[in-house]
Image (cartoon, rainbow, N blue to C red; front, top):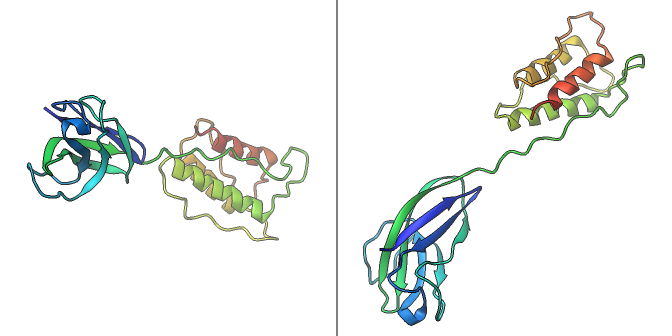
Length: 208
């Protein structure tokens, strides 16, 4: 008895029909085999919802079709197999359920400060650099399955980087539970050191 087997993948799935009554070729009366979205009974008319099909070779082959892969949106689906023979009849060839997965999230690149952030030297992070760091934090949050942190206060050229601004980065990173602990958020009036900025970087980059 013919049977449809489906194999899930990332944004694709594979299908194959096995157990045909004879080798899948034109010499044995086959025209094509394929899969459809809709269940059907034996039919001498056309069927609808065909997702993919393969033409029968003129000779040779086996009682199975070759495995074919189809690009498809993520989700769980039922499909029905069929064979078409030379007299125009469509024969059912089993059914199966398959789950098509979303592509795996790609880990963002580690963060490195553009400027020199080193003990004993002035810290001169630009507004552009700080905003880019916050964007990278959000990239990591999406990667681990959290929403973007919507409370980031955008920095502008000439503005000082205050305790309130860096506190937002601390909370946004800490929510991801990084292996390397996030530094304590500074209080107003605290000196924000190079070690603090580098600890923020190390904590973010420790996320696998």
